[in-house]
Image 1 (tube, rainbow, N blue to C red):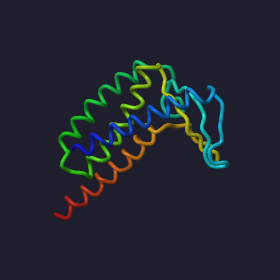
Image 2 (cartoon, helix red, strand yellow):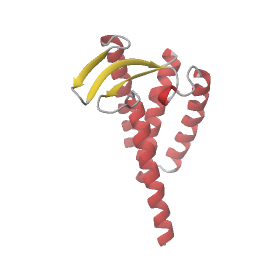
Image 3 (cartoon, rainbow, N blue to C red):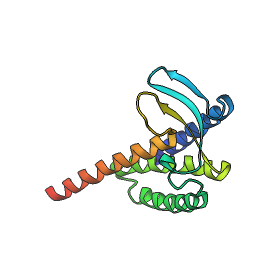
Length: 151
């Protein structure tokens, strides 16, 4: 369990630190090539979810985030001994906290990673944590179900 906490803290600090750096070093809407043709940094204010879904519904996102934080903490505590669930839940929790802090502090989420080779939404470290965490959780659930069927 302590490793989960350390992972969560490091990811949230990394997410918030990069967002702070981006907002102080890249003008809003500007694009700065990092790896030409692959990845650029930008400074985007996202007042919705992915693809700006539910744009401007900050209270909705705050309430959903609070409920999600409570549920994720419960499941992380319940499954703390099972690393198949603990690591994905830690990533999901870190991502939820990272974007929740932005919504509370700023009223929007700071996004910065732009993939130059594909038309894809601009995202941040918290979004990556959420995405990877959900994918790992799905894999853990599928393998857990397989293990249960084989018993």
